[in-house]
Length: 193
Image (cartoon, rainbow, N blue to C red; front, side, top):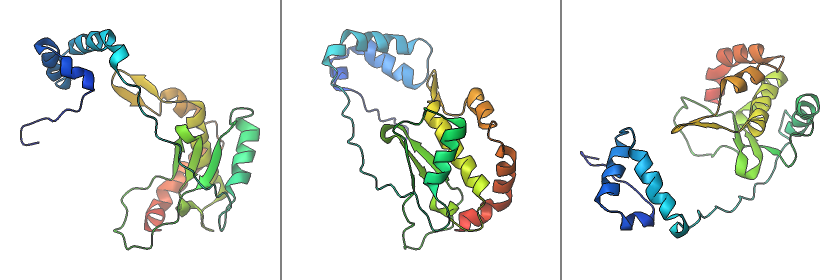
């Protein structure tokens, strides 16, 4: 901000000497080796670091029956065929109804989401329309089920959700290419929903 970087740090850094503060600044600028100093500082004070407060799980009302599509039936069939015994405790629901407030036209849309803490798959209500084919909704649900089975991978500072292995397994779904083509042809219509 205006030539300044604001940093939020754990309270143990109040004890940090000039070497550690310099290492913090260097780490922000991605100077090689700077993080090693910080890791050592934190390792020495691990008992002073308070555990992260976990947010309480949201109570989500699970709604699987839509006006045109039943997510429970889709989920159950995909689980039976592709994920036997892998979806224990996972729920699926339609996302919330869109607000009645007037909004600008979307430029993007998240059609599916897997929330690991809640073991919940949420599917966008834009897909609950008569003109949206079943194979397309199945492909979105299949993708989110894969996220449950394949957690993200950390590579250095980056978190990778769609690894090459994930992309390869995604193609196991027999209508994968057809679903990609359908999405390209109908994305504008989904965005306008």
